[in-house]
Amino acid sequence: MIKRLVPAALALAVVGITSCNNDSFKKTKEGLEYRIVTDKKEGKNLSAGDMATVKLRIYYTEKDKKDSLLQDYVAMNGGQPIEIPVDVPLQFKSDWPAGLKLLSKGDSALFRIPTDTIMKLSAAQGGQLPPFIKKGAYVMYSVVVVSVKTEAEVKQAQEKAQQEMMQQSASQMAIDDKLMQDYFAANNLKPTKTGTGLYYLIEKEGTGSTAQKGQTVTVDYTGKLLNGNVFDSNVDPKFQHVEPLSVRVGDGQVIPGWEEGLMLLKKGSRAKLFIPSPLAYGSQARGEEMPANSVLVFDIDVKDIK
Image (cartoon, rainbow, N blue to C red):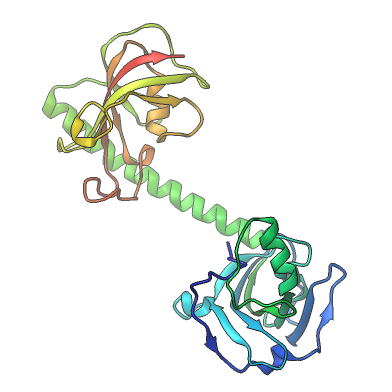
């Protein structure tokens, strides 16, 4: 999401953008002031659902003064343009992203918003603007449209990324399953495998019904890797949180392996969950104690189900 207001601590670099300080601006019916600098006329204008790659710079401008560069998203992104959805939510009807629909690939434009409008918005939200922001001035957005992905292209890219993720997940699942099978053989364990690839071993059967979605399960737990390294526990004072953990099942509060595993257990159950990395944290490392693609082992003691 693009930050609309500039942090007070942001240093100002004075630049001469004389085009920002003239009066050759038009207004949309919503009240957004704009000036088309370059009109390449390459294809249709941007529309909702499109993804625009843009060079974006933000200026502060007062009448008869040089414009001051507030934020340069090109520099912040290593000299590369940024992506922004054309239908990004507006803070008010004349917010600058509304002007994207006036542009097509290769176009450039200036959009300006009166500081009076920004002050009113900030006051309504309980915010505080930098002291250099004065009434009667403008915040100026310089936008160059480098490229455009249509809504269909965005959807296609998302589907491709999802397919690649699923393929990577399936490949990693096979690797993890082999690691777990070797672990079970070495430790003489015979856990049960679910359809998702989770393994569980009930060491003590509880009573009553298994946990259902919407219920809160309270547990004690210890988490470790296949090599035995413990990375978290609420029963070991070393980790400084020895209170029981309560989880509302089905709300996505925990990793998928836990969500599924908790619904296999009854009150009073004690069990081990063997969670392949795609059902845990995947390729995301969680500090030095948990490398990427880690298979997780949890000792779970169910204290209550409500």
